[in-house]
Image 1 (cartoon, one colour):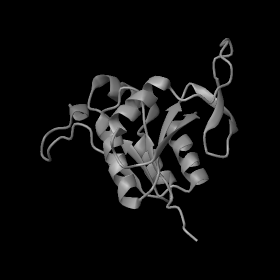
Image 2: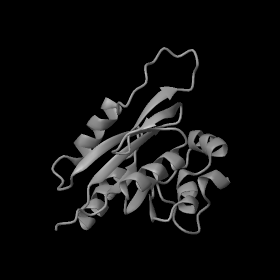
Image 3: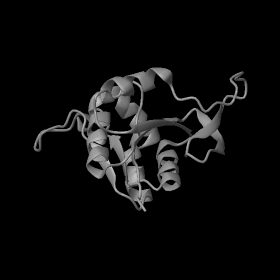
Length: 167
């Protein structure tokens, strides 16, 4: 009996540097595993979890006329396809909803992922403001998972230099 290796999950967002998906594809290739690119929309809540780990979600806005959906952002899917074109890794997408660390962790449990990969936060004022209110997804995952969490550095700061958010 041939056993399929457990997948690798990477958290993806619009505008995210390609380095995160590229590094995640290298991990997946090393394991001979599928790469699952998961995008979490925190402005929506889960109505139903589907067998593949994706969800049907609805807007938190009670005045929203949007219908419940399972759709993955087509623009983000096109970006991922461009980045992974020609790479020898099988990949798929999942649209998730709710608090990002919980959603990624729930997906990892459902598909029995070998690891979760996320990008580090970018050292900008906008990201610092968001971090103040939402906290670090990587830290939340690291403390709430029994599987490895890999953080891909975005704009690393050399040791000994002051970090932009400490200024």
